[in-house]
Amino acid sequence: MDVVCTNLCKTYPDGKEALRGVDLHLRDGIFGLLGPNGAGKTTLMEIMTLLLAPTSGSFVVDGVDATRDPNAIRGMLGYLPQFFGVFPELTAYEFLHFLASMRGMPHREAKRQVDRLLTLVRLHGVRNKRLKTYSGGMLRRVGVAQALLGDPKLIIVDEPTAGLDPEERVHLRNLLFEMGEGRVIILSTHIVKDIEETCNRMALLHAGRIRYDGSPSAFVEEAKGETWEFYGDADDVDALSGRPELVSIRETERGVCFRLISADAPRDDAHAADPNLEDAYVRFLNLERSAA
Amino acid sequence: MTSQPLPSLQDPASARRSIAGRILSVPGAAWRGIKTAGRGVKTAIAVTVREVIYWLRLFVYTSRRYLRVETYLALIGAICFFGYVVSNDMARTQRELLAYNYIYFTAATVWLASTLLPREREENTLEILWSQPMSRAGLITLQIVTLTVWMTALCALVVYGFSRFSSYQEGKWLIVLCVSTTSLVVAAATVLISTFTRHVIATALLALLVFGVHYYWLTSLGPIALYPFPIKAPDAPVVRWGGPRDPSLWVNRIAAMALAGFIFDYLYRRLRRTAEWFT
Image 1 (cartoon, chains in turn orange, cyan):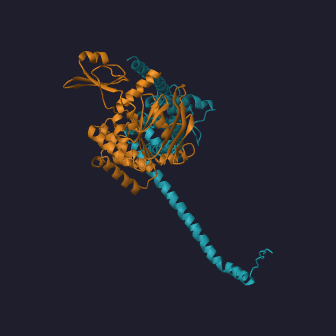
Image 2 (cartoon, chains in turn cyan, purple):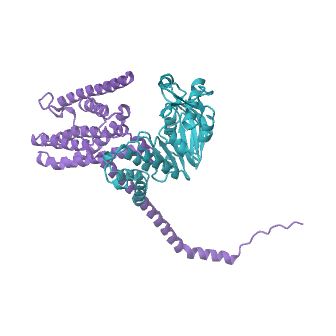
Image 3 (spheres, one colour):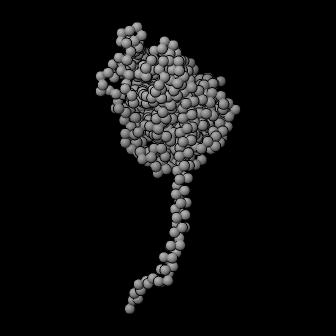
């Protein structure tokens, strides 16, 4: 499975340039898409789901050009949008069966798949309840199930774990990991931990451009030697809070622990810490800000 | 010396055999032709059946989605409106009956059609639908046709049910035909309007305004013929102008209210955005 974006550009009618020449070549596995708000993630996803046409550039899935045969690509696509809505008057079974019917699945096959997917997302027991009675987390799981309908080869999920409790989040992450075999899964999220724990490759999008494309571990490696921790008191909290290089503040038995990104040790008592993806991401944003 | 290939000579016996074989194979060829044609017909039937089942299933689900409060209100509205028309014996001619049907079904179609795409947009279901392997035109057509079918069914129920008690009794099927084509056009136009207004209420009000204005003023001008009339259109002067029961008076008021509502809706959203911006 190959997904190729070549020089994708998108300029909105108001003149805003959302994408400025995005090149990506994705193969089987889970691909994380990270970036601050307004970076162009949603625009890129909407182009990939064919909801939006690019101003220029091409999007090809398994040799099929999006402009030539969009329905063929839609047939290979499963999509979970960030703001996922359902038809409240239908039951979960009816909703999924309706979407399966739209995909042209015969009744028996649709029924089999819907039952399997509802079991997979742990909703089989409540499949005949109307969707308006579902909680936010349950609706999110219905969204995941509909994205997996028709055994799609390309799955695009936008903030899939938003609104899920920790157990459901872990379950969903594992599910995505299992589904990654023989498929391309594109995961866009603000939750850095989701990318760290599931993706074998990631891209960082900033101001409409891909600024990093590689493995999460290599990205984390770049922050090595620039992540610091030290203990302070309430005065330090006032002094440091709001500073862009600050990653976290947490209460510990030894006092308030500050974690921040800096090229040099911020204080004499600061010690170097092992960076994680969040540290590397904050470092990247700081570099972008200072470059701007 | 290089050897030259000899020209091939056809064996007369084999040629005779081939002619004989061909003659003998005519029934076989005919049979094969019939079989091929049969397979073609079978495939065509299978494809047709599959397509019919596909669209029927989508039609059923789309209809299922209409079963919500707006539809129930439209049904109650039909009972009240036509109950009033029949009890006062207001439809004595085909044109009068058609006129009342037009008034009700235009309003009802606008009411329900305004909840098609704008509601999908408001409930965030549009992205899911449009990412399915089905053309947008197909999806919109499915919704419009489903609505038209149910409007036609309701019209048939009204015309054949309610008007049993009215003075006018002939040519009812023509009224159903007129209403069905009108519903189709009104639904399509409302969906078109919804692409500009984007919200359910704004769509309904603007469409009501457009059709109200069109029906009571512009149809008499002639050039605009939005309603496909298979029979002579019931022009506005069908009813007594200026009388106490003059529907145009009510439509005028509804149109004015719709206009005010539309402006209010727009201002409200604008104010809300401004408030969000300030806070």
